[in-house]
Image 1 (cartoon, helix red, strand yellow):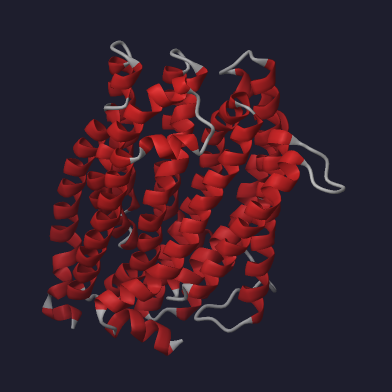
Image 2: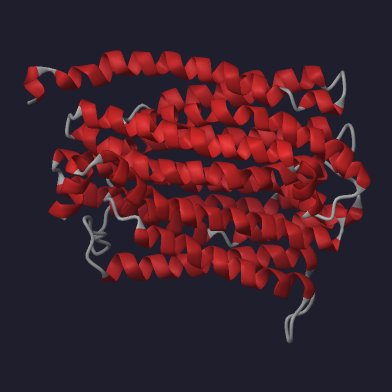
Length: 454
C-alpha cells in the first residue's frame, strides 16, 4: 500500500502519468473500437437500423453518465483520503461503490421497462425505426447492472494507482462485446438472427462479463483499499462526500445526453440521414476523445493525491504534462478528420446523401478538438480537488447554454451551418474554464505552498 501511495507522491511525473494512463488509454481505445464495430454491424442491417441505435444513444449516454459520474466521485474521495492518510474513510468510500451501483441500476431498470417505447416514439413514426430503437434501448437499460458495478470497481482501483486491473476489466467487456455482436445481430449456429436487439444483447453480456471479473479481482486480491461488505451500513456522510463531486459529474455527463436529444430534434427536421450522421460522428470521435479520457483516468488520482498531500508543485506538473499530451492526441484527430472523412463514413456503408452531409460535418465539428483538450484537463483538475461544480458549469456552458441555441439559430441557414455550433461552443467554454482555473488556483492551490502546510 505504501509503495502505491509513494508512487503518486514521489515518482517522476511524466513516466508516472504515462504508466498510469497507458492502460486506461489502451482499454478506452478498445471501447472506441467496440463503439465503431457495433455501429458498423448495425449499419449492415439497414440505415434505419443505424438511425434507431442513434435515437437510443442519448439514453445510453445518460446511463453512462450516472455510472461514470458516481465512480468519479468515489475515485476523487478515495484518492484524497489516501493522500491524507485516512485509510478507514478510503475503504468506506470503496465499499459504498457497490451499494450505490445497485441503487442506480434500479432507476434504469424501471425506465427500460416502462418508458423505452415512449422515448423512441418522440422522434419517429417509422415502424422499423421505432421497433428497433425500443428493443435496443429497453435491453440496454433493464440489463445494465453490469456497467454500474464494474465502473465503480474500476475507478476504485484507479484511485489507488492501480491501472492494470481496470484495463483488464474494460478489455473483457469490449472484447466479449465485439465477438458476440455479429453472432447475435446476424445469427450463428443455434443463435437466431436478432438484428438491432442482438447488438443490445451483446452489449449487456459484455458488461456483465466485465463486472464478474471486477468483483472477483477486487474481493480476492490485495489492494490499497478494502471493500468490506460484511456488516455494511450506508453512511450518509460518505455518500454526501462522494456526490459532492459525483452529482456535478453526473449532471456534467448527462448534459451530453440532453444535448444529443436536442440535436436529434434539430437534425430530424432535415432528415433521418442527418441524425445518422450525427450518431456516426459520436462513434468516430470516441477514437480521439477516449484516449484523452483514459489520460484523465491516470492524471486525476495523481492530482487528487497530491492535493490531499498539499503538494502544489506536483499537482501543477501533472496538469501541464496532461494538457500537452491531450493537445497532441487532439491534433492528430483533427488532421485525420480533415484528411479522410469519406473513408470514415464508408465504414458505415454510407450512401451518397450521407457522404454529402457527413464529410463537411466531420471536418467542421473537428475544429472543436483542440480547445476541448484544454477544457477536459481543467475539468479533471476541478474534479480532483473536489470542485466538481466548476466542471459542471463549464459543461453547461459548452453543451446547453451555447451549443443548442447556436445550433438552433444556424439550422435556419442549413444543415451544414449547424455543425459550426460545436467549435463556437468549445471556444466559449474554454474561456470560461480559464476563469475558473485562475479562481481555483488563487483560492485553493497557491495556499498549499504556505509554511503551515509543511
